[in-house]
Image (cartoon, rainbow, N blue to C red; front, top):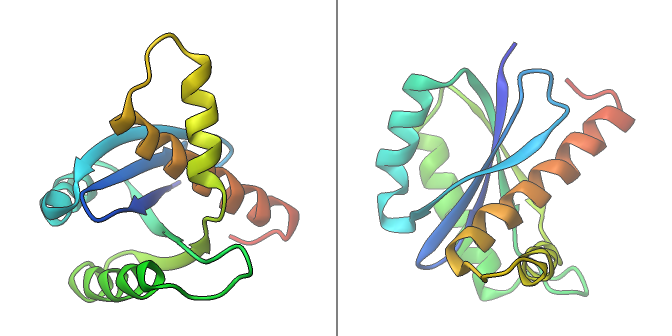
Length: 137
């Protein structure tokens, strides 16, 4: 069985999260510099059995596109052209960063970089839950 990777792409940092092979659990993985994302993906795809990459799509609270939405969509399209061995999905990421911040605050020390991978885990968890409910493979 193969895994699912989630990306929370930002201007400077990209958070990543990885599922287990049963696609039941989403765990924060690593936070990488966005400029290094292509190398990170090349390395990870050679090491892990990943079939799908879910990219968090930042939309406004009213569900509209913003400048960040357009940037993310364009970046995802470029990555999709480069990494064609996996399927790519855009997934609504509204409120995932706020949830990640809230989780981090409960800890002793706030790690801003780790927040990105926690946000990616929330994106992935939402996607996996949707797939379980709708029996999507």
